[in-house]
Image 1 (tube, one colour):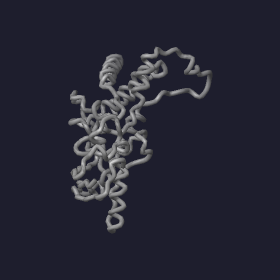
Image 2: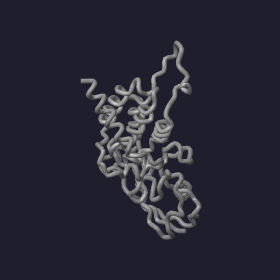
Image 3: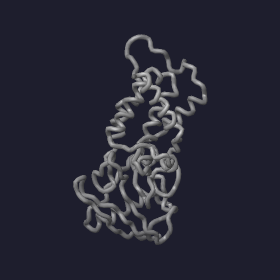
Image 4: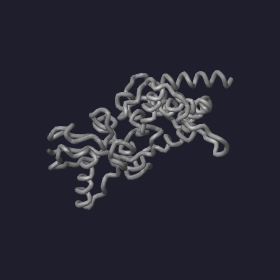
Length: 249
C-alpha cells in the first residue's frame, strides 16, 4: 500500500516547527505503525535527510513512551492499544496520515514527535508511593486481608502506563485520569491508607503546578486510554481530595 505522511518536524523546543510531507510505497499492512516510521527514517537517511525523532522502547504496549497524535487521535484510530501496537491494516491504500506530538503545556515538545513528560514523574514523586520503614518488624503484605473487589480495582488503576493519552485527548489538557489512577491504586489498599491524605493533596498540588487543566467531563480520556482506565477513578480521587482538604483545615 502507498501512504502520504504529514509529519510534524521541529528541530528543538525553541524552534517554530512545521508539517512536512513524505510519501511511502510498499507499506505492508502487517507492519506496526512504528515499523512504518522506521521505514520512513531509513528512506530519509538514504536521501541524506534528518530522520524523524520519536520515542519508543518496549514496543509491546507496556512502557507508554511511543505516544503520537495520529489523525487527531492519541495512539491512532484503534482502541485499547498504544502506537506501537497500532498496525497499518487500520489504514487504506492511498491514505494521508497526519502525525503530530502530544500537545499540552505540561508536555513541551523536545524535537519532532518527542515531548518532555517528566511532569508525570514529578507528580508521581510528590506522593505516588507507600513509605516503608527499613527497621523493625514490618507486616507481610500478603498477610493483610483485602476484599477481591478492592484488589481488582486497585490492579486496574495500577495498569496505567503514564503514556499521556488522557492529557492529549482532553480539551483542557487535564492529567486527572493519570493522577486519579495513581491515587486510586493506593487508596483502595490498606497499605496506602496511612498516607492517603498527604498523598492526594501533594499529587493534586503538583499536577496544578505543572500546568495541566481541570477535568472537562467529556470522557475522552477514558476512550483514548490504551489501558481503559475508568473515569470512576477521577470520582474516587475527588472524594479523597475533599476528605483530605476538610480534615486539614
